[in-house]
Length: 85
Image (cartoon, rainbow, N blue to C red; front, side):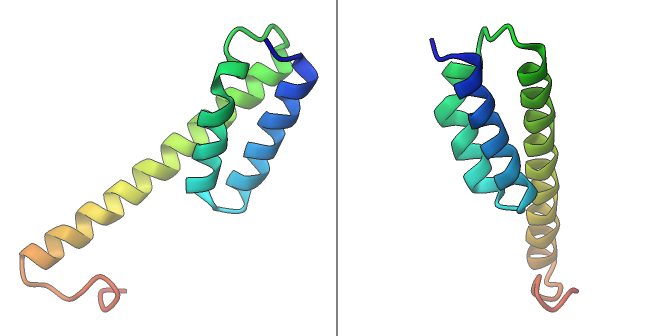
């Protein structure tokens, strides 16, 4: 099991990546280090992790919605997604 300090660095790194709107990379970092996050007793790190997970989930939800809207427009014969903006 990794130390709380190491896990804290991983959580901060993933949060910084997520803040840069690179959600794919933030998700990769989260998944790579998830086994380290599980069971950590440091409340601050757990809070950071929960904030990160919620941020990633919301961002993926928005991207999925945008994809679904673009797909519906194409199926309905509407403008291409780039032209709809």
